[in-house]
Length: 80
Image 1 (cartoon, rainbow, N blue to C red):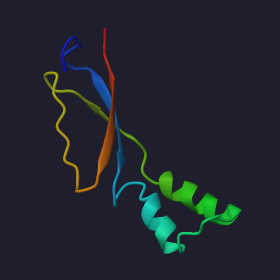
Image 2 (image 1 turned 45 degrees about the horizontal axis):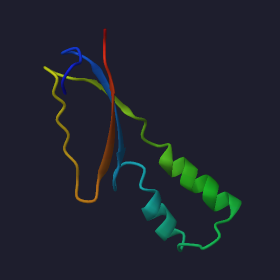
Image 3 (image 1 turned 90 degrees about the vertical axis):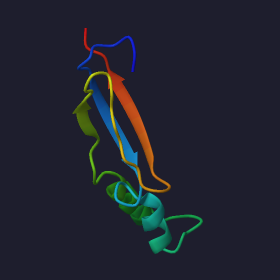
């Protein structure tokens, strides 16, 4: 990262088989075309299991390891 403080903070949101695997839960309930209210609530519960990971950049660098088909969204919070 450039043009930010060397020790800025970051928040990492992950989506993979170990983090918020709503697709796996959806498939486990039979992939309903029209999920019931209870099924939707279950999907919301699965999605809320793992909170976002707060971390600090080290020398303007952040290293992540993602599994196959994994997704990470990184929100960088520059310090003054």
